[in-house]
Length: 401
Image (tube, rainbow, N blue to C red; front, side):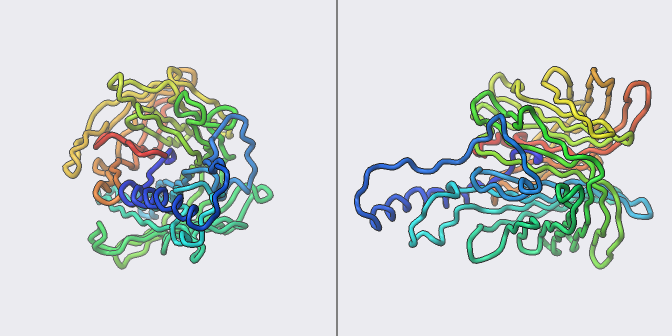
């Protein structure tokens, strides 16, 4: 959610957590003389009253368990050929950053980095995607600061400039998928993204609440409009593209509860300059029920914002799509209404099959794709683009993030 609370590993991650939890106490015991019990470090919770500091908060927050930098966008060529893309970097920790591991556990990672890249070709009705995974360790550079960057093999997020006295970064995104890795031809993006609207902080009092429990929240902000220029490569052909992207950065330690089965998330950009972020948190019981902490953020063309509670907006599915790969049945078109803003929209996938299936490798299957928007704001007709993320439809989302 990616923006939104996202995609840690399952099998591989659990194995490492088990190893650390089992070996670390033994190694502590074997390397130290008996001492009184001490309180072990814990992850920091996302709590109300958080004071954001930029550009510092664009970087890594190692005291929190989970964090991601999430980019999606809509691109076109000079000949009006359309693409959608997703590039996301996730950091997930096994132990708090201030945990003192003995020398013998130096190779046991304290955190991992995971990346997802997907490219939608609207005219060709194709969707290709790939994931990458590595551990964060002192022997290779994954995250850097001043300026901030992330490197996961040849997938990179690099700060190449800044605006507003360094507060707002200009970034370069680079990612590629080789032939045969879920793609019949090599594909790649190389984009430079520049903010054109002010940063938006979601939620209230510094937190985006995801459940009623204390700390079941995240610190979450977005750049809802990023002018995007660069290239898209398909096979041997590289083409210049331009468009608009959306960026989310979110970090927290304990967002979901056992009764939450998944979420629907949208980032909507209208041609009149209005933006909307929304998420619906679906519950196991009652079946189909929504957590009252589901919410939205309305952003005016000039950058003014308003937090919307569940009940101040309505998102209703109008159709479904069934995946032949996973068997999951996903909503496939939606009607969105925000009465206080006189907004009535219909959101439709540009390509139906934008599902990422990682069940055997990463324990997660979800739908994330480029959508088109038509409707009205007041009495004026409006069009736009959106990115939509749907989790928990192929299988309940049961990972702790």
